[in-house]
Image (cartoon, rainbow, N blue to C red; front, side):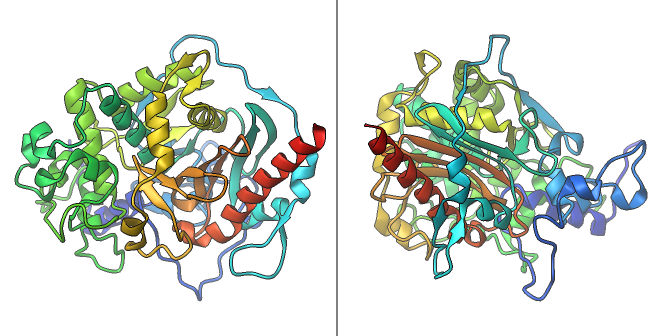
Length: 446
């Protein structure tokens, strides 16, 4: 018999889904545990047969998104919700050489808006890091794990997922399978009456659409709540009348402003892009990712994606991967799309990403800590002296590529605050410091 949940419980579950795609609100007055106090391994979450009542984490009551339970959940999403596999295939994994540089731990830098130096080692705890790898010229020079994540584990990539989807779309544009100037309604007629219908594919890929999609958690009428409710894979309350899948939700999105006027970071854009990819290719986003990227990288592990009640992968934030495979992806991008002996992504796509987009459009979004950046193909482009660009996800997920230093950093984290504005001050200058160190080290060897 179908089991219906109460409206209160359903709202809690919808809130839990938001962790995958957007920023959360944390009270400044609430004292929450630091990285050591909240270590999920030491706290013993989900250990036992069964675990003690006070150490059980569930999806259906919303406990999995609460802090500090979150620190266990992000490394175990597959145990809590329905997912679809992203197969690595049956070939041997590509080689990752390792030559650890112990000096990196003691590198110092100045956090943004601070006069107090911080070491790289200290920054990892400050950012609730779960795992981090620094790759230099294709060789691992730093690798470290915390909590319940290890080399064999998988972790939620959150909105880093968007970058994979944007890269797939850019590949299909370069191959002539998609036209960036076409209107979305030409690809998805079901969206003709929505705000997306008149937007171009390029505007969706660069998030310059004029859509009404507020990610305001204090407002229960904000569209982000309807998005989460639609994507919730569990049974809906008897009196629920809203959309029941991501695709149904996208058809309800209304216009706000004009397409192409400014950058607005909104998860719904990536869901639309995922729908276009699936419609044109006849393959789901998970299948495309497996066939076009994951198998070709020589990934060590399968990845997986969370899905809605119709089995549609969450293109906006549902990807989970191993850390070493995430850094393989970054190295492939750094190496102009070449990895594991083959051209995986056309070099023209990499060039387009690195050039970035309009800084003026980006400035209108109000990211005060990201001055001078832009957003292209769902990549964040710094336009700094090293030409760095990156993928970003809530709670501290990152792939940072520094072409000048020939460096890639992949990080998984479970910061108590979802918005990256909380960890950027101690993350971005730390990445830059490692890049400068590696450059200096290389020059000293010559």
